[in-house]
Length: 125
Image 1 (tube, helix red, strand yellow):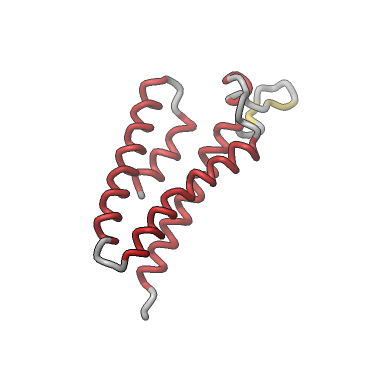
Image 2 (cartoon, helix red, strand yellow):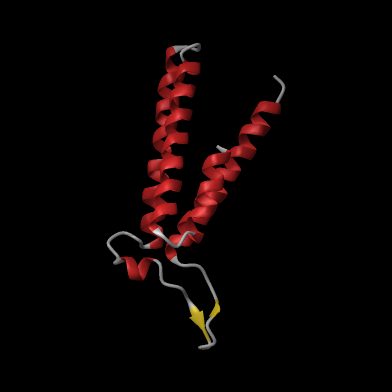
């Protein structure tokens, strides 16, 4: 999860394709590894646990669909997705591009997931 958080924080500041591809590769590998590990662990629990886990792995798809629709990223040319908002003609950075908002929002959600995992791990039954 920490790899996902770090990669999602680094993606908005990458400027060339090579680091972007490498960060995306790291995200894919860490997601794949966590999926395999958690699926194996849930096999120790009742069968419905695997169903809940697989459902949980589909929730990010719903999150991304909602965020892409909410930010209006779908179907835009790349120049409009990554453009910066400048104000007063002085070139000062005034806001985030749509793509940066996507990555930073995802970073916040990942961070909240890490905090939630630690809280759940510390709860005593």
